[in-house]
Image (tube, rainbow, N blue to C red; front, side):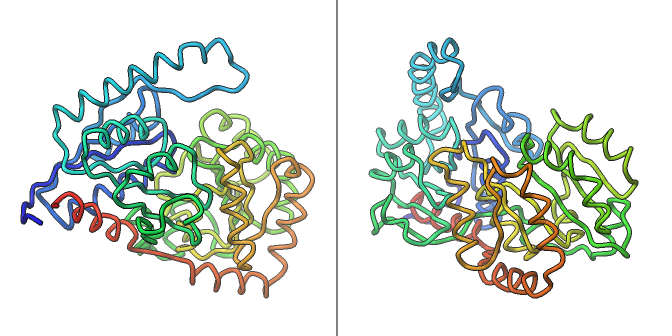
Length: 369
């Protein structure tokens, strides 16, 4: 092992906040632990990472890559060409940047970059966020040096010897939430005399959750709750109009920048079951009702949520039942104090606050070989 302190690392992937924010957390942890680290992010053109990564001061290059689109056969005709083009682009990026290690966090750009790196014998690390690994990561796992996971029993997907349990990396401000409940409520313009329900459908919003909440928002406020509702930009106008009709204690946001304030303000949470959301909610330790996105690859969100349900750390509503069952489960949750206590205690036990640095240390380890 060498003592070089200026290692060069590519972090590849994105598509949603669930991939982007772990990537950022890992990158920032690398630079804290080894300040000379040079980072390059690689994402997919037109995706969320191309905006979010530069906002944090990092360079990102976009690949011409996309995924298979169900129900849009014409658009899929070009997919093989995009796959070939993205692999050639990945090869060029690697040749020019000369990384000491490559990290894949999932998303469209992860596979071509990781595969190109492995073909060149560059050390690679997979950050597998979910309890059910995707096919791309399973393929990459055969040649990866290290596979960092957030759930137990992942040896059914990856070689046992390569697996390291680290948990999922979360944003530093969430791992170290410092704001007071009063400051958090004031930030959203809410009262400290009411319980608060936080509703998040992921960084891009969730149509089924938004539609269900739209129908029962009056019922929720009639229960004495105030609401922070992240809708995603496509659903904001309709949701905000509904909120204005009903109550001034419903705050609608397209995207919540200060999630540490949102988690601190919340007493209860309704959320999708992406890996990042679960990692953050475990740290927040607030009673939660998951509505998994059923069309995620291999239905991994349902698998993620059920891991917590089995441990009495969460409740679940199926996406196709959300219209009729969500309000029933919300009422059940907010009136069962014992259930709330059990959930909060079990969530705390599952929280991992230093996953970013654990993963960064592994990257440094393989990069310095």
